[in-house]
Length: 128
Picture 1 (tube, rainbow, N blue to C red):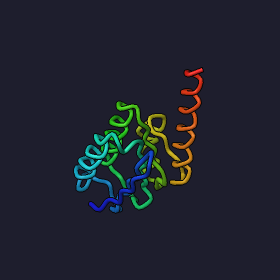
Picture 2: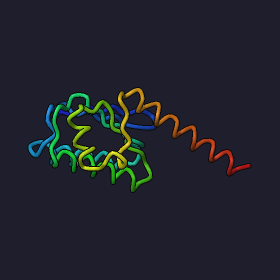
Picture 3: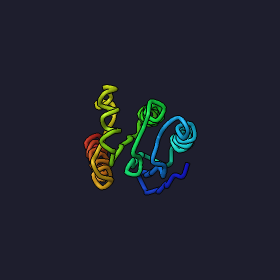
Picture 4: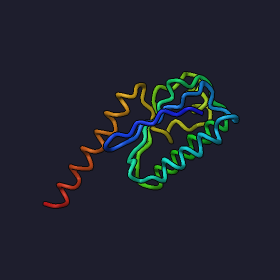
């Protein structure tokens, strides 16, 4: 599975190149997410699903794994550019409240930036 990974200062963006996130590619995708998730210096993560047209339960499982990995290490995962079919799968699975989802990658980046500002504000308040 081809993955585009872009590392930024505070976060990474991973964009799967496959059109399907199913049982044929999900194990490799999971493996890559685990490697990336265990590299704490990568910071937060944006998963851009703009190329993905279909996901099944194994694809959803890989996204849940990534969500848990980042949540458990006090980092944030944001998914963006979801195809309506993938959004519906997450909705039917009653997982909309589990994930942070934005329409565009720019919105995901803005969301992460707003979290950084909030963290900076909290730090300043603690030092006063």
